[in-house]
Image 1 (cartoon, rainbow, N blue to C red):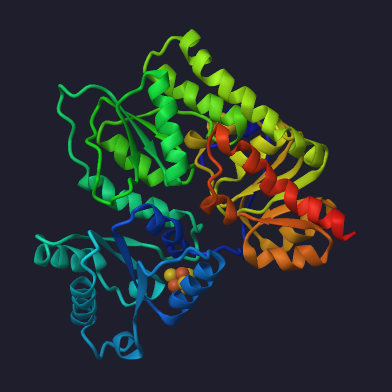
Image 2: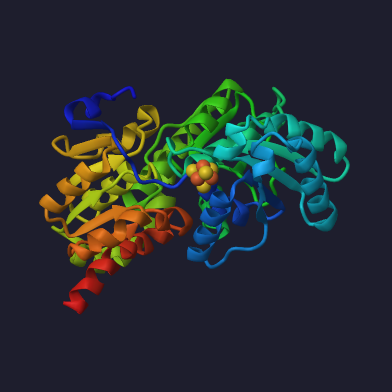
Length: 420
Ligand code: SF4
């Protein structure tokens, strides 16, 4: 990690102990909702299938556009040709499902242990079914990653498929990160009102609807956990527009302003478009501030959204930050968020879960933002919790969702108040 200026002033804890996170397979939950013609075929074990089932159970909107090709003991023992088996399963799937336009082969720990080369398998299937659909591969494995990195790996696999923009093409804005359709529609309207007309969202509603990119492309991240995708876009000469994330009123304002500035939109016009939206959203958030103001919040590292959410709760909800944990900090992406955090807070990167639980309990916090596995023990200690995964699959971005975002934090506190 390269600590940025503000990061240098903060108290940083770097821990490399036991950690409690889901793996990148989890990203399929929201990716398959967005790309409506994509199918995710996990090449994994029964453990991977169980993870997906329990994650899908939490998220009731799950549809059968993902499945697990189970690696059996015969495959692990090298008794079966795993490539042949995979071709058989994938071919049966493609023949049965004409609605699939893009098939992802998703690697897992077991597929990596037996060194099953899914990129090669994807190339082979892609050529065989070239007239019918596209086949790509990425890895969702990993106990050393965070669950949001699955989206990064998936989008990174799509970047090489993006066409090259012609030198004569006008500048375009590429918004990167999975957003709910309703949020995408609102953002399109606001960018149009600002005067930014060539706007593409990545990923789009159809997996292979990919924008052309080149030196005239400005990349605005809507999610902070897309470091590899950003790196690949920059390698294609696209320019990153550094900004806060569109969480809450101030984050959304800064996010739209950064885009407007990149397209030389006059300040007065920016304000005429954005300030009425900001005023309306501030009004809607007021009642949540009354619940949250002065309460203590602790972030366990889980999604990489933590510094941006902490900024929102501190700056807009007036909460007290005790510790802000993040599994990994991409300093260049997070700079604007770190700049808006108080200089004296404790930030942590990585995890040593037992020590962190002790710190959280000792701090007697009101609310902990954490992974599913830590919620019950914390609730039993009298600490209200918010599952961080909810903040990834709920529409929370933009002015219109600011009050909903605040409600996600105020509701657990109100519930506990009612119970006591
Ligand atoms: S990919 Fe690895 S960490 Fe994820 S469910 Fe499968 S075995 Fe577990």
